[in-house]
Image (cartoon, rainbow, N blue to C red):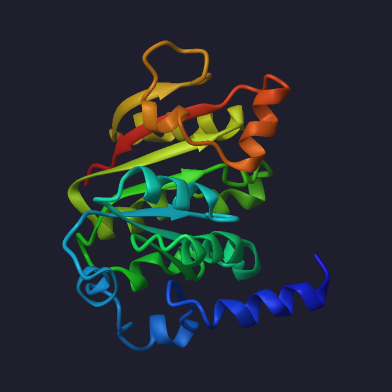
Length: 225
C-alpha cells in the first residue's frame, strides 16, 4: 500500500464515529475515557462486549456484528490503515454494534475495565515461531493475564489459526497452566459438529487457505486464576 493511500485511510478513520485512536499517554498515564464505559457511552446498550484482537481488515468483526446484532463487537489492531476497510463498511452499511480501536494489544487492560468484556476472538495471529519472539505470541502467559483482567468471570477466549505451531503451543500452555479448554480441533472444517460461528465466518486469507486445503485450527477456552 502506497504512503498516499495510507495517509488517506488514516485521515478517513478520523472522520468515522466507530473508530477510536487513543495515544499511549491517554491509555497509560491518564484514565482512558471509554474504559468501563464502552456500552453506556458508545453502544448505548448493555449488550455483551466481544473483542477481536489483531483484527486486520476488520471483516471478521463486521461479519460477527451482522450475525449477532444483540452483541457489541470491537476490533482491535495497531494498524489503522488495515481496519479502515471494516470501519468504512460498518459506516456505509449502518452497522451500529461494531467499533474499532487502534492500540497495541499489550495495552488492552488500559482500554477496558475489569469484567467489561464477555468474549475474545484471536483470529490468525502471527505465530512468532522464533524463540526470541515468544513474548509477542498473543496467547502467552502474560497476554492471558491481561485478558483475564478484562474478561467477566465466565468469559471465554477463541483462537482460530492456520498455524499448527500456534495451535499446539497454545494447547500445551493451557493444559500446563490448568486453564479450561472447552473445545479444540486441529482441522475445524473437516470435523462434524464444529461450532457454527467458527465455520460460518471466514476472513479473506482464511478462504484462500481453504482453497488450498490448509487446515484451520480452533480452540475455545476459559482462563483460570
